[in-house]
Length: 117
Length: 415
Image 1: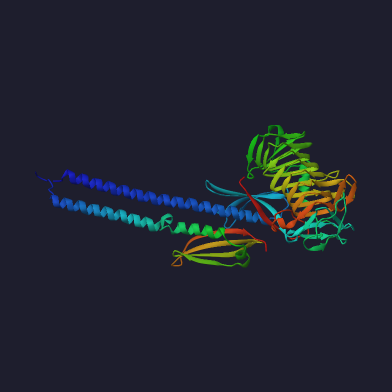
Image 2 (image 1 turned 90 degrees about the vertical axis):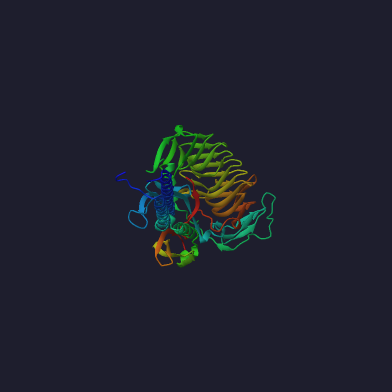
């Protein structure tokens, strides 16, 4: 038949396999891309930073407030640093900064505390 | 030539891959949304907490409500509201972001170095305090120069080894001043001068069951006649005011509600937390229970106010009986505590105080007066117990003039 395309069965199978492999690779690439690019799923580190920051703010002692005693800890490749600053009379501002192991600021929170020496 | 079977195979694989990709994208999106939602929730919680901290520093005697930017203009705005509530203050804070909102309500009270171990402060009226029977003074006492003495009253001697258990210091001829603004504030309510944060409702329209948030205006159920409270369950930002008297029955549930009237009578009431403002008489009937932080404020207008605390009463909080301009020598009792009554907290009495019960906390009084069938005894204490060691050093109560008062949150409310 004039103009008809004839493909060998083996070529077709190879093409299909190639398409399939490409699709799987593309899907995995998307998955990896999403895993490292979105804050909500970046290896769960943001969730971890959020949860740990809350815990740290909930458990700040009156000693830390009165002495401006900075807190610094490192958990699972994230460094947490709590610093204090005067906000107004008898009120201190506590700020949690979370840095990754390259020193980049990835998360921050702040809260005010009443204290009376 | 294409085989149909191969094409179907290719389409099936593509569909599966597409579904997996879509699911992964959806999962990532949901993760992201969840994170953003919880993060904002946490940030709003932080901001509401921060607003309460700011409210605690406020020494303004006026009620107020305002928007405040916490850290940056516009992005961390919080709504703070403060108003007096009985002997305490209520601070309400709310932080919002789009349709998310987090609010907190705290009750603020005061503590001071002076009251941390103080059991009794008694005005020096050039008379000793005479104690008899099973009376107990445990904790630090500020007493008149003439100190303490044993007395023989109604056939009873003082039964303990020591006259007091704690450190002794000298008091002065002038009672420590209670926060005058507190008394003035509630005097206005006794005169029916309500403020702008109040919403006046006829007491006849009182709901049987109501929980009213401190975010809203205070509901004032007002009546010019007697109010008899039966079968009701009220909590929160509610004030009940009568120009005559209020009676509270035993099947009533009140939580954080304020009662304002010249005369208030409670019959076997069990209140989570109740605040009473009266000018004439308050009777806490048998077995009345009022949990911390409750309060009673009695402010005289033209006569000495009278508070009776009956047998079986269990009261936790602060009591203030103020005479103001009526402070003069009289044999009328301002406060009478039955032998089987129990109080935990602070008692401030400018008038004559007959104490025969048990107080775990601090008493600041002008004069003890004991009325018995055989006579009236001035500055005598028969069987009355005052034990400061059974109350937390950081108990949150009243603010006193000239003492270094520190604010503290004593309770978080779900209202």
